[in-house]
Length: 370
Image 1 (cartoon, one colour):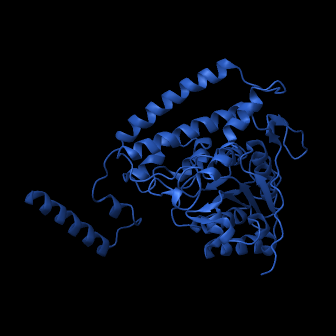
Image 2 (cartoon, helix red, strand yellow):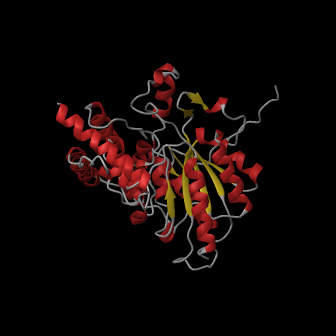
Image 3 (cartoon, one colour):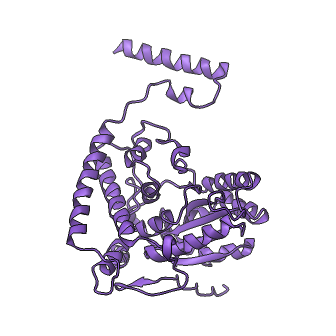
């Protein structure tokens, strides 16, 4: 077997409470507000924890946890501009938070009360995609539209836009993703592929999917690939900011590999101890993105640090958010039985109308038989 070259170490600037100066980290109006980023990560993590509890209580059918990936998601989410458009997988809860999506709306899909939960146009945040890799083609198609609308490379910051599409390491093995790479490269599209390499595609480790780092895949398609420490929110923001700026300016696509770790099972129906060890999880817990930033914010060298009042106020906000989620989840309206038929097509054809009427008649008969 041919030897595999060692991967380039992920780029990082924040470690052991020290934030190193680096020209790649944006400053001024483009700089990441570290207290805002910390708040984002903490509250998004609370959303995740409450959703797991709701699932265990029978209020949700399923929940895909993002514990451990908050730094990768918040860093990218805070690099977006108002005109940019996001295509998520089904685990980007912290990105949804950064985009202003009410987290209760995330719960509808997993409670079975909606087929999406929110209006994608309201926040430029598209619906969760459960089909692995499908969102990459959706993103490329949208990026084609941006080019045809002339909203890229104009130099006008209020007009130029980009697409940020999220994917996991498992999606790199899907044909849709590689097809999306081909189209993005061939047409120089303003799209950033943001791969959260959390080491596991359900029970398959990344080592059995690829013999090179995820970021190195980009070279074969003719565009840049960047490896970043996915647990360093500052580095993730800097890399996403740079890639999105390049895309808006007409520089074409970039593949970002945020090296992180999924600390919880793939979903609440998964038993991760059947395929990985607790010691591996313990190791990544020491690299926790939330604690990493907190250590800096409370350290003596932080010029933008946080005091006890900040953390106390945030703890109270956490409690209010948890109450909002619990009450909001249980208040989600039960859908009418004809809703899937009403929202499948813009104009309901006769055959679909017949199926709807047959379905409603069956339900009415079943109710009478009780």
